[in-house]
Length: 486
Image 1: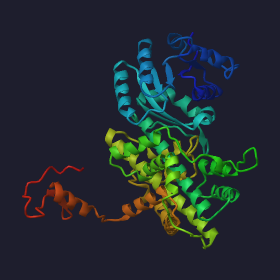
Image 2: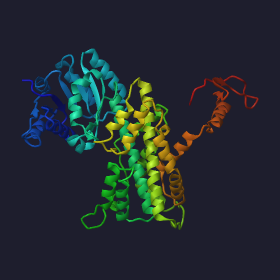
Image 3: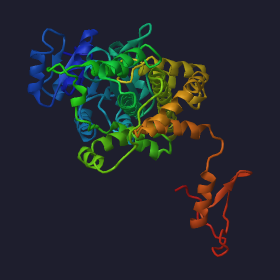
Image 4: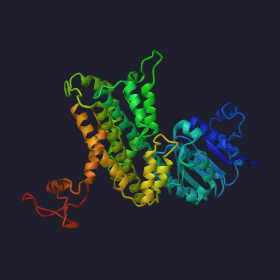
């Protein structure tokens, strides 16, 4: 008998937690896993006493679903998703909905387009949804970013918005993102911004520790106080907690952790996507490269014995004032990171013909996910003021905020460089800001160089859109190549 509101395939921890979240909100969920013993274990343990029902096979699962059938796939991105879709299609009817809730790579945007087209031809609806917030978010309220066939939204909206995190007066951190692969693309950009936020905090920590000589308790106190300012966020909060945390021997745990960072690839996908679409998302790129450099631990240890930096420098200024400079540098750099992230979303929307609601996206990230912060509310307000805002830096609130931080930002970068502290994200953020605010950059010389050695042509300021070639040496002739943009 059809009794379940929705089914979920994939009983790893995220899947189990999402099922229990839906159960808590009054929805009957049918659980299925390719290894059926996992279904039995789940029903006898985590789901014991709940309304969750299990399925022994895909046919059994489909038979237990109310129409239109709604099925969430939480399996490994890529081939596994396609395999399950292929098995499900013969069992479903027109109007049924397949939802991919996995961490699909940005390249899968084209795969999502294919899935949307293929399933639509069969009368089925497809949704690709970003799910953020980790295991705890899945259990108690994630940020959800669905996109795909919009006709599916009325049938999943109640479930998605019920289980999502809530902010403000109960607004859900979930709304329809856009067509085809928009949901997964937005989730990918979210993860890239997460990389940037984390690296910026690490650079602030490095400056506190090695320039100001602060101990762990002092740094924890600083981050605690920062969390009561514009920087109020989940990542600042947990940084303070990490700095306070002591090992079983009573000493701080953080200095004992190996300084070699891993990655699952989502930040890298954002950086690659930015390069593909010609968008200068420099901060996320540097955050990825910082992790790559950190992973060269043995090589760095060897290099530290032979490569020298500034010697004998001690900070002799006002420590409290410089700590405030670091805070403002972090805030300004964070604004740049988000400005770049939304630039990438805007460019992707042009590339794929999506209509994205940027204010709604900011609200989706306001709670339930790793980058959740008060700051995101300001981004929503900026897009509420101007839905066609070209860049966050052109909004009065953010331009004024950066202006207020600018002197501190520059002092922080200067001091860090003088003390030999690596600050890839602080410095690239400032470089982007300076580049963006210049009406004239030295790319005119670059264009002349390209024309000199390769006859690639250039435009004149007085006649844009018209490409010309100069015979710079008198020997090269007047034949030009195509005006390609390599």
